[in-house]
Image 1 (cartoon, rainbow, N blue to C red):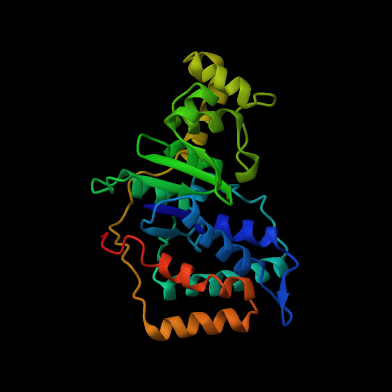
Image 2: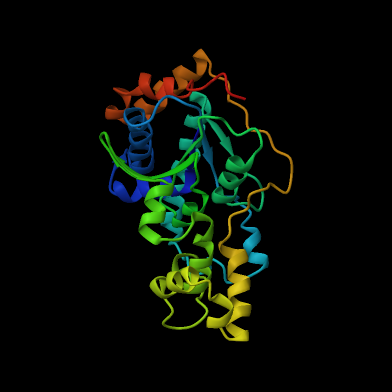
Length: 282
């Protein structure tokens, strides 16, 4: 099963082609996003795809630390350009039969954690597609992270790669972020000057309590909650396939024509068929 970080892919797509337009409308998200999706077929075996989306209502982490992600100030015009395309992109995914999931209060990485921890997880395992470093903690025997790909080459992160790179276990990754902080998510480290290299050393030596003052340890404990991905959904949820129809095929083709996505139109059959990957899966 392929789990894709929807917001991460769409923003990455916009910055890959920020100037692309059609009739005065920005189309970088649609063009680059669909190109990335179609190119997955070159590097992975056909299997079910699920797009995971951050909750529009914010994250549960903000109740623990109100400053969480408050540093992400995006120009309203830019946000409008991107999110107007995300709305179209999500409709395309629905029409071609690709499943999508969003749950109020949860982020895409939490949804990924819920998927990989389910008792009925697919035997073939998971490919997690995200450039978010938080997802590295989900790596396991049947879970790999794909951060980037081009043509038939790809940057795979598996258990062996992680252990050789960091010399800790993937499930200890949140502890690294808790000690050193995460500037992207506006999470401060326990103290100035304690970066990832020192954090890794402390964790390898199993010396966290001794290395921190009482005040620093309190910050560390809070940060662990912020940096750890949920593994169990707080509510029941089901993620089923969206139905594909002949009318949907017509809308999809018309949408590509309307946005002048000429290169995507040459791949529309391939993209359409990706909605049928693993259709027998529940």
